[in-house]
Length: 159
Image (cartoon, rainbow, N blue to C red; front, side, top):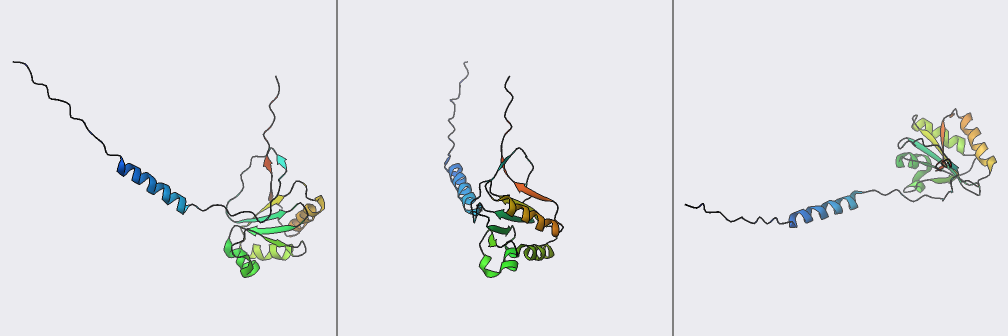
């Protein structure tokens, strides 16, 4: 007696729930993501070959613009408000004068002793302003700071 073969049962997978989940995840990440706020002033950074990483927390950023204007900012909005008042709410950095910088740095270091200093200077900024800034930092016993630059890849040797 011949064997009776059973026909294959077609399995149909409904992909609608999978698409729903994908769009829910996409929507969640779009709404939950915090974008980096825009810079107060645009600075064209000089080039270098250094690849060291910048700290992400406990950061004091001092920006020197092309025309010599100085901006100071902190990663903590609480510290910004404490030092500059309600005028600094929602701002990344605040413009200041070179003469006021020592007092601001002192107050910031009292509030947060772990602050690390980053200097962002325009490639065309006057050397004197940056030099004065570094002297102020040395007077305040800050001898370790990072200079932010554009990464320039080393040119490969021609063979």
